[in-house]
Amino acid sequence: MIPLPDNKNVAIIDDNDDRTYALAESTALELIKAATHSSETATQPINFRFTLQWIDNKLTLKDHSKRSVVNVCIDFTQGRALHRLKYGGGHGQELARAIKTRELPLVCDATAGLGRDAFVFASLGCEVILLEQSIVVHALLKDAITRAAAHPDTATIAERMTLYKSDSTLLPGNWLYHTPPQVVYLDPMYPDGKRTAKKEIQTLRVLLETSPAVTNTAKRNLAAYDNTADEQKDYEISLLQAARKTAKRVVVKRPRKARPLADVAPSGNITSPNTRYDIYGS
Image 1 (cartoon, one colour):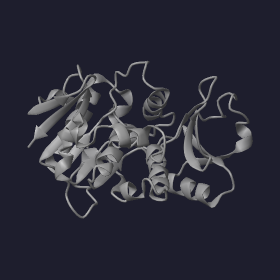
Image 2 (cartoon, helix red, strand yellow; image 1 turned 60 degrees about the vertical axis):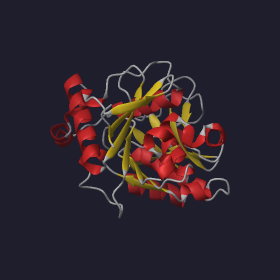
Image 3 (cartoon, one colour; image 1 turned 90 degrees about the horizontal axis):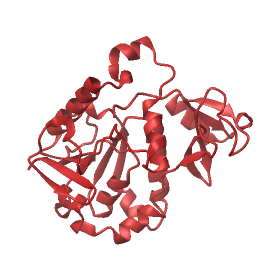
Image 4 (cartoon, one colour; image 1 turned 120 degrees about the vertical axis):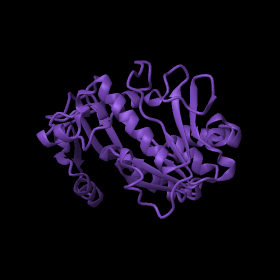
């Protein structure tokens, strides 16, 4: 999936809090009063399908398009993240073997998304640089890492995670960290996603596909909005080429039966029942 730039179909609920105003300033997303969406079962807020707000002190993306509002929140301090930390298989799991986590490489997660795999790399001792282009997903990740850094069970792990808002197709020219990565990890959201995907993944997919106010300049500079097969292929080629210019080893996560990214055959792969990790380089 080709990620869109700043999504103008998202607003921030104004709760008169300094952190909310700081978020609005850093993202340039519009602030709206809470009265414009009065309940969990309310219809879509005026002009906005998505809203950002703090719920239980966690930044949460709300999708108001359905009768039952879908909430997306990233939390490394409990639930799925901690369960995977305890029972995920350590360095022996397929993902870790593909990254060679035993060697503790500096890893660039160039399509950070919800940050789950990056958290695994960091939990296994790797320094991880997370790159995320979407201002909304970046905000969710930043809040999650901040909370993880303040939690005794995850503070050490969070210290190994450094987040940047960045377009990974521009690598290595826009690399900001002081040391180049040894591994670049790619998990581009698969465009032909099944409807059976978890609701939060469906919500993120729609978020990244939807842009109600595309300027003429954006249309000229980013033809990705049409999301045609040719444009998707061009994006994949750019992403893979950029990754391979940045590190000697590139690992791409794919559904097990999917074609390789950009139709470029890897030098090897490691498979699990539903997933394949294609490896480019040494």
